[in-house]
Length: 212
Image 1: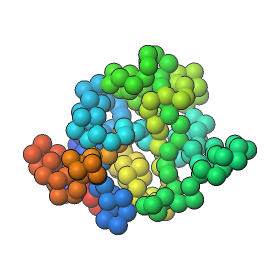
Image 2: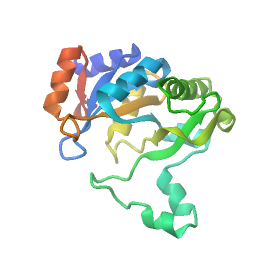
Image 3: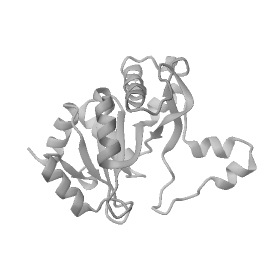
Image 4: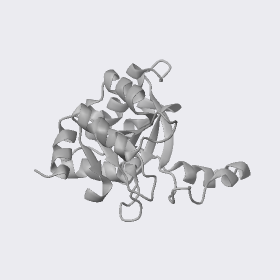
């Protein structure tokens, strides 16, 4: 079994993977896990051992079904000049941001606790897996504490968002996956060498985006 097959199997089993996008891009490693099996303990682990922003990614068709789009589109179409001025044409790493709305599920309290974020994430996956996309505005509100990402065409953008969503497709899973950037002790992104060491010490798979 090659590393990609092992990664797909791990994703299907609800395990955390480490995903490196590419040298020359962000050159960062994210912890990723499918949204269905996220628990409060998962969020705690991402928060403590990865340390970056805990995001929920989905694909374009799903975003269209529930009626959301990229934040940059909202900003450009808002009619507010300041939002247009703040909208980046391109980021330092070369792509437009994948961010959309920040969500809380209606059953959360503040939305920020590990328990609340796990609830928001799993209920989002449950909603789309059951095909109940029309329930989105009834079950969630924004702004909240779980930033959502919308994958673009993987042929045009190969960020962690697109690579992670592509993995869900290869694994036959719903397009709902959680990502969190790994931070280093030097206050920068965790180096690929340190990520490899972490993966080995914790029995996790580190997959390079070029394999997807």
